[in-house]
Image (cartoon, rainbow, N blue to C red; front, side, top):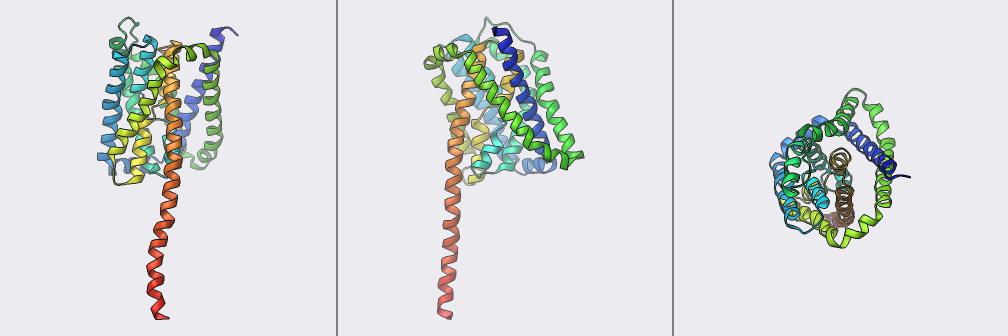
Length: 307
């Protein structure tokens, strides 16, 4: 199959993943509950947003600017830096037995902020980091994000409000389609561009590990006392948004190596967080029975003298 046809098929699966993911997120959102939870924890949420849209982007883009790596890979790092609001963060937070409501609220707000910030900042950032690249217009970045991320999200929210039972029945089938499309997109892309993955891996993508590690480090210090909130902050900060990354690389920055870098960084982040979430979940399960036994033991001791 010619490369143009291959890319058309790959991009089709990517766009279908983005649409179904945004629609599924909207179908699952309880807007009133989410906003109330966000406002209740606004100080914590504010710190998460500052890290995701100021500190992490500055570090990632700064690395891309000074690192001796391919220019297209630098573009991929700029895209990753500005794409926050990871679609799988609530599911991974649930696996870690963290605060799922907080994670969902953060993801929703970060998706909206990403759609607002990225069209204005990304073209300027890419032009500064890679001076020779053709500058993309603000609207050229904005309309695909609005059409493929925000519009399905709003449709899902509307259906949830008007037809809650029907919306709930659609969630599982859509999630199956969503995950299938992402797997097909990722694997077909790796298959089509295997030589480029192999040729640049050791020179550039070992640094991809640093992105989730930085997110984990910053997320951990946001909420030190409450384990549930801490896990939610870590997961939503360490995992970048593959949905926004796919949209931008399909419509604006179509260089294969830019897409390769976005794919690698997101894949590495998901794998690391899945491992951490499983361990955190096990640790919390083990702690709860221990706490229950410690409470029950004095009660039995007090009961013995009365017999």
